[in-house]
Length: 497
Ligand code: FDA
Image (cartoon, rainbow, N blue to C red; front, side):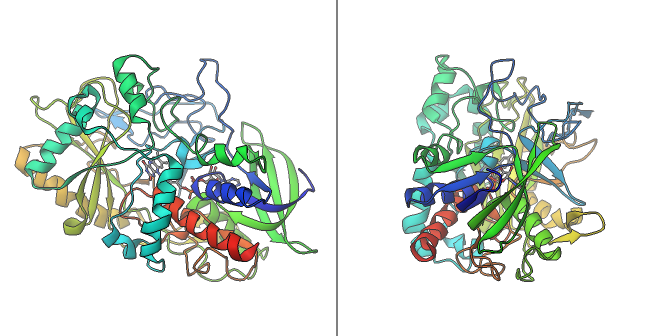
């Protein structure tokens, strides 16, 4: 690959990158995808590709020597442990005021996420993507994305009796008794497979606590959907453990892309260069933003405009737990795949996932990840002295998210006579306000790019991932990232190729 010239190079293999690769390949274009994470196609010594949440190991974290579990404590005891430094699957990337969790490997975030596949309510769409025509998104691109991702919904009858969703039924009871709308949430996990897990006729994955570090069965990650179809065209090549460090105009037209090949300790083994007629930035909101602010500041891409790096949001993520009464057990067996949410967006600016705590023991805890209407937006910038991109998010900027989440949980606690858990994020700390699973923005549609993701200032460069979305999707983001990518790549194929 060193020295090669390709028609299209895609940086990253998450949702945006996979949609671009599939649709370009179907249009007859050869595509080379560069992915800094591993391929995740080979079992480890235990015969499994992915590690379990209850026992993180060398596969679990991206280049850390200590795990950084989103729930850091239990009953006051710290949970994190030392692990060898390895190109593991989950990156807990630490900026000054926030830890941003991201998937690393072929399939990006689809490898680690809970698969909750939520289309925003249409009445909220103008808040999500103000410059995009809602009618065509809901008629064409959301349905296309849902079909491509293999989204399906739980059998409501099975939900009522499944032992592994007792925690969700308790969540529903409490939500409804306080007057909140309770909604089922679609997922890319195969619910029929989960039924077989529960019946003891299939190898357990969601019912064995697998989530965050990959699912060995049941979940349709991009490896099973878009990327499988892309590879089947014969036009898509993927290079794992390769990290793009630079993109700059090439002398004879197109762009020179500089790529570090790394080993599983994260060290650079060799540096390669490729030339591409067109380059798609699909490194995720953080990856794309970091690359672009560096390339603008160092003069590699001097035409990028002042909007690059701006408009970054955390999708208003905040976590909390509630301590239930002893007559409200949430179950020792909890499916790791969430299936329900409490929708208080219109009244309180919060959509709360009823999330599992798959510890294998009865905890009497209800656990929630809330997506909230947090107005704060941060900016990436290049610190030349330190040689790294920085993000100016402040921890205190989570306060609007906490306030929004409290519109739900203060009311439920008052109604049920219950209290918040204070042992999950430290000692006497209620709110998990130090993190996000849903980074969005940094190269916002219609600002850093035109209305289809073409970067201003450099023809032939595109952004096609979560960096395009201005900070909040009102629900979990990957269906919207996928649908927007479907919309943009269709336009780009019809006009730019
Ligand atoms: P994505 O992050 O998927 O892919 C980017 C890829 O680029 C990565 O594979 C990365 O390694 C690679 N890359 C970065 N820099 C590079 C470089 N310089 N060179 C080469 N490669 C590079 N969403 C949802 O809708 N429902 C859910 O249930 C959840 N749950 C959830 C749980 C957890 C733990 C996490 C971390 C995230 C979620 N999400 C989620 C969020 C969802 O996974 C996320 O929004 C998408 O994966 C983002 O898709 P993108 O295409 O933007 O990038």
